[in-house]
Image 1 (cartoon, rainbow, N blue to C red):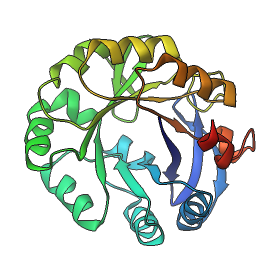
Image 2: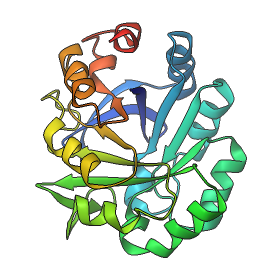
Image 3: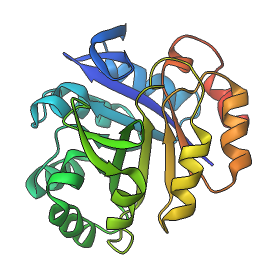
Image 4: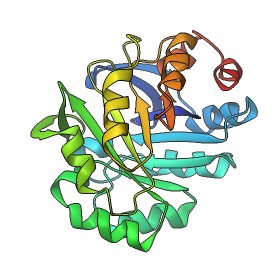
Length: 236
């Protein structure tokens, strides 16, 4: 099971949102590159980086911070937020990102996902962010009528590297991972699924691992607030 420490960016700083609400952001660090370096020194081999402002606006807004992170670490970095064109995908991969996360584009421009996945095998991740089982887009500001499994099945044969499932209602709130929903998605699609949203304890990680079908987990607030260390998470 892969562990992906999260670095969420808002106005150039490292933050965590509560329930996906941009107005409820907790500031944790002013230097994202230093955070990335610290995670790497603590053993992280994967990092999940999100340009929150970019997710809302539709174009990258924290590019300088993301580039600083890429320069500061040798960890495998997946980058998301406001990436809605093939040129943007190519630019981030050329800049050193290991993978690019497409969310809104997966709903609004599925052909882009397929084209990118063909062009860059194993380097495209589809974000399936949900409120009450329905997929949300545009920085979680809009909710579609599509269910998570329906979106996941759209890309079953596209060659994407993974699906990233976030239960928005739990994200940043330390309420525990929605293991049941994540495992159900993983059982329904032939694509590795990463869990995100709500990790609060090592017991949550144990529950994700026990599900067996979940490929990895993204961890945010629990690490920033010292609920456990990255070393403990990796050991668990």
